[in-house]
Amino acid sequence: MSKKILCVALVVLCAALLGACGGDPPEVAIVGNWQCNDNSQPHVWMCTLSFDENGRFVDGDGDWGDFSISGNSLTLAFDDFTPITVNFELRRNPLPFIGDRLILTGPDLRIVLDRA
Image (cartoon, rainbow, N blue to C red):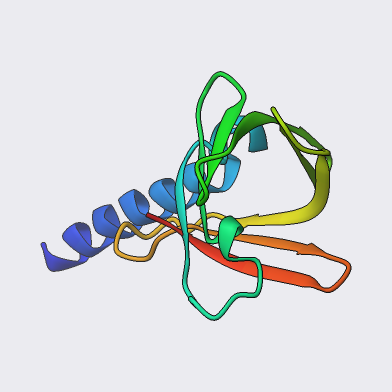
């Protein structure tokens, strides 16, 4: 009996992990609130970023704009400033108690944000 329970538990765990591997496209997966995991970042305005499902974002200074994703490039097109393009990596975690991580990199830039 215990072997059957163990097998069923393993099948459920494997299905959950395989389901987490597919995931949403980056435009959808990035939606939500992100917060720096290190407040000593030199680009403090980027330490809080919120992306919505309509392709809009707001940064830590309250500046709004549109965002777009092409491959591993994220462009933040501010309403009142010059657009910024950075490389990004989205690390999705299938375990519910460990959050997702968003890493932004560019010339002289590396910001690590956790899903808030």
